[in-house]
Amino acid sequence: MSLPRIERPDLPEYMTWEELEQLPDDIAGQIELWEGRVVWLRRGPAEHQAFTFALTSALKRCARSETTERPQHCWRADFETNVFFGQSGKSDFVTPDFLVYRCLDAPYQDIRAQDVVVAGEVLSPSNSQTDMDEKKARYARAGIPWYWEVTLEREKSAIAMVRAFALETNHGDLPAGVHPLYPANYLLTGKWTPKDTAGIDIEFPFPIHIPWSELDF
Image (spheres, one colour):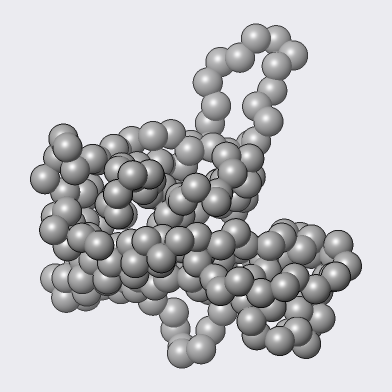
C-alpha cells in the first residue's frame, strides 16, 4: 500500500477497532490490527500504487466476464480493502493491496476472510521479507485459497514477475518430532514474467487472462 508521508504518533502496542476509529483517517489508514496489535503499513513508490490499480482493473474485468457467463457465481475485485478475520469483531484485520471476493448479500458489509478467494500484495523495496512472510501466513491461517505476489523491477517502472500460490492444508511427511511452523501454507503453482509469457494466464478461482499490455505503467 502506497501512502503519503506523515509523522507517526506514539500509539499503544495494542488497540481495538473502536479506538482505531477515533484516530484521524490519514493515521488510521496506515494501520492494520493483527489480533489487536498495531502494525504500520509500509509506504511504497508511485509504481506500487500504479500497478496495484492496473492489476485490480484487470481482475475486475475478468470477474465481470465470469459473472456474466456464469450468473450462479458472482465475483468482485478491489484494492486496499480491509479483510477481517473471524466471524465477528473488527480488531483483527489486514489490508491486501488487491483482492478478489465473493459478492456479498448486501451493500456496505465488512469483508471477512471466508469471503475472499484471492489476496495479493505488490512488493516494492520498502517491503521486508519478514513482514511479507508473516502477512502471507495470516492469509493461509484464515483459509484464503489463493495468494498472489507481484514483484516490481528495481531499475525500471515495470512488473518483473507475478506468482500465484495455492493453499495447502496437509503438510508432507516430516521426521519424527518435527512439526510445521504454520498449520497451513501456500504452494507456488503459477509464475509469469514479461520475458517468458504473453501475460498472466490461470483458470482458478475462475479464468483469469491478463496481457502484459494491460499492466503497463
